[in-house]
Image 1 (cartoon, one colour):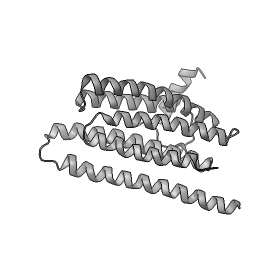
Image 2: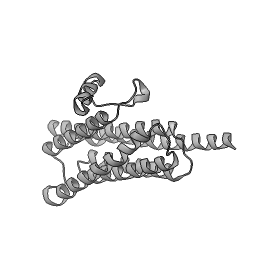
Image 3: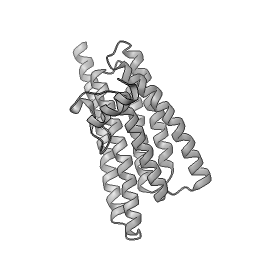
Image 4: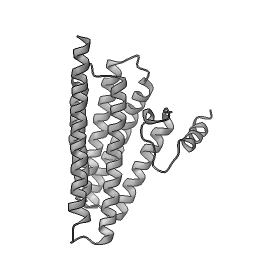
Length: 219
């Protein structure tokens, strides 16, 4: 029975990986056809658009890799977390599509990813109450809920009172928002070296993160 469960779990993981592979492939393809090779866009518009796509793409890759790592260490015990990852993959494509089309609804998709990620962490804790990753899962649960609220408010204000199409200022704001999210995540969670530590903050070494952590928590 245990061997059969492991086979089913591996099949579910492979299916989720396949979904993300499709999403990432579509993102790369549409970035070239709808942005880089689009003759109606100016060079500046293309640069801003590509920066936004890169920011969203990095976050989606980061989220998938962390979820994959935690799932390997805490395998599925049911189908709840699996279907949540499927929904997140669907939202990931929506977020990337919004970034490619310069539409503000990508904020909404990211906010929903935060919310479903929090739910996924909560279900993992319920399935593995004694997991060695419980602290990280608790941080994800609280942290992503807070950022979902912040992102939801920002998305509502931007979409209804600013404009529906992103500009240079909005892209810079999003990049800063994403950088702060990744930075504080790494500060709160001390992760191992190598691939098991997952991707970190762009352009910031783990040594710098460790120094900031010591100063923050006065270790």
